[in-house]
Length: 259
Ligand code: HXC
Image (cartoon, rainbow, N blue to C red; front, side, top):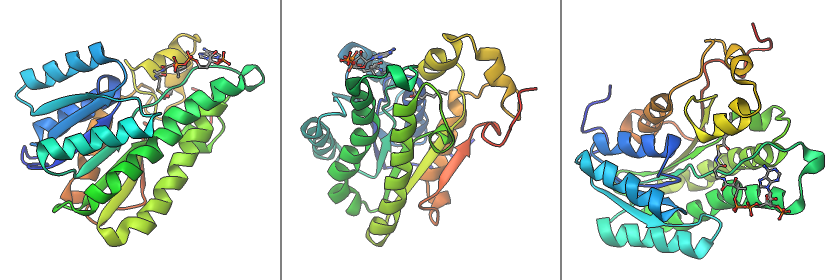
């Protein structure tokens, strides 16, 4: 467990923060003293998440935002700075995905996922840049990807290409923006139980048990595993870490066989 002041006085903006991994990151940041803004499309879900965070004593705000729309992303990030006076941490977590063999994928299906994952991440980085540059703690960008994006991900060519694009973008920004004291890193979760992604890709397709066996640890991870990694990367403990891809996957990408 980190010390409760680990992220004291930081302001974090988390896309897709209303559910799954994004909510757990928001919760962990809040518990470590950060003010958190969660952004996603579904107002009802967002408001419920905001109330849950506030009930825990966390300073939290929700802004309805479709990450596919640059103007909305920029407005929400500017509103965050107007409300809390700064932006220190951007977490690009919002993602869209569905299982579909590539031969059956329509151009719009492809574009939809690229728009949410890759373009949404770029829009967040672009809108946050001037604010992160002014962070007194040093700016921080963390994007959630997956090692499946640099392997081969049957049935998810759209998401794989988007995640690989985010990895590339992050490495370039780490180099371009390092001189502005902005660190840029990615986290690659493995299969995290109790998330929409694992449900869609593995449980709904009848591959739950197989996919657990494909990890070195033989089990799905927990959302808290990713939230802890996100706290570490955002904190001063990772002050010299930039351009990194922190793999938190139970050894999934290293294992060749399911046994
Ligand atoms: C084939 C599909 C499809 C499916 C949608 N499409 N679902 N094609 N199979 N199952 C196609 C549609 O036909 C349409 O193309 C295009 O995609 C856009 O679909 P819409 O429903 O209009 O899009 P929209 O309402 O914007 O919804 C976006 C979405 C949706 C991505 C399609 O699933 C969504 O909102 N998802 C958010 C939640 C989510 O995906 N969570 C998982 C992320 S986790 P046409 O040509 O017909 O117009 C993750 C990590 C996974 O990604 C890690 C696993 C280990």
